[in-house]
Image 1 (spheres, rainbow, N blue to C red):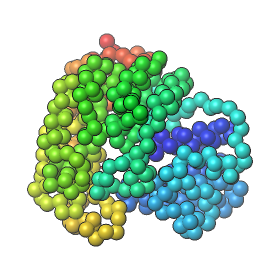
Image 2 (tube, rainbow, N blue to C red):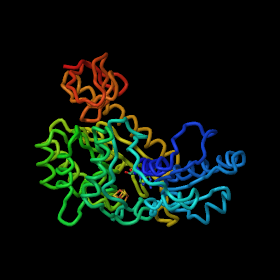
Image 3 (tube, protein in one colour):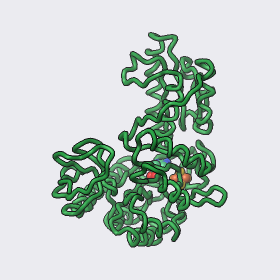
Image 4 (cartoon, protein in one colour):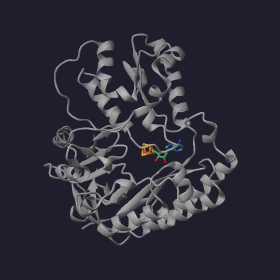
Length: 402
Ligand code: 5AD
Ligand code: SF4
């Protein structure tokens, strides 16, 4: 989500004739887009802002913008008080109004459109935001507080954005939303939005991020079964394998319901790759709860899992961690090892099979299941080709174009 917002911000700068640079010494303006999902992310953002003091001293006419979720949480006054050299603060809730801050600093916006430019993904892939914020109340999560309740964009706005990005050369669209499959605008459901997007000219593949387990319905599974352009991968955060912890987290499903959902999804698309997120050390997590999470790694057959140590996002005493930092670290290590082992098994199962690969270079691309794939030669950037895989090395499949 932050990457998509950053691309929108970069586009606003480009409309004024600015270009991106990796070299801060050459920059006329710096935008720090901040995250606060865990305390570590917020700390990083703060130290990043702190480091700009020297830059601003050398370049007093340069502009510093601090935007995003940590900016929203800490507040503009607070940030400007701590870092007086910051010119503008734009919180996540008003990130769409970033242009107003640009106007305040740099004068009125010139007319004209800029072509879409991909910053974070390959040139083949573009993000399209379909909803902002989140209306769920997972007990550990700060997102609803800093991004506000869920608001869906109209299907017209979504399709216009996706079409423009396809016209500018993208082949793959990633529809973005905090609970993207809860999308509803008037009568348009998530599945209908997918269908409309799938019909856009030039689209080779459609992804979405991130769905929530409670919002999948039969219409979606039917679409998954019948639409090969819908990617055979899904990032479906589960957070814990313990029913007790899932209930405390207010996730709205049980371990059994989640596994049942995986079965239904894989029934519709047998080669579906599923990745996930886990949190370890949630308040009150026992050895048994953790063992349930550990066991889920294999049972869920996840291709990949991001594992996080629980980070309290409020001062409420009942929300502070109940295990020691050493224990937290030990559980994380165990989980990471299980994930690594399992990911390798899942990857090995793909060897000797045919993968649909969207090439980024002549030798590298991504399979529909999101696996990285390498070939010796022959790939056409922007084209989907069938690759017969022969082996795997360091999370990357290798093979030959058929
Ligand atoms: N502590 C640790 N991890 C968290 N996440 C969200 N909030 C927290 C928190 N307070 C993780 C979840 C989510 C991912 C984006 O970040 O796993 O899916
Ligand atoms: Fe946070 Fe995701 Fe839960 Fe929304 S669904 S509260 S963004 S973890």
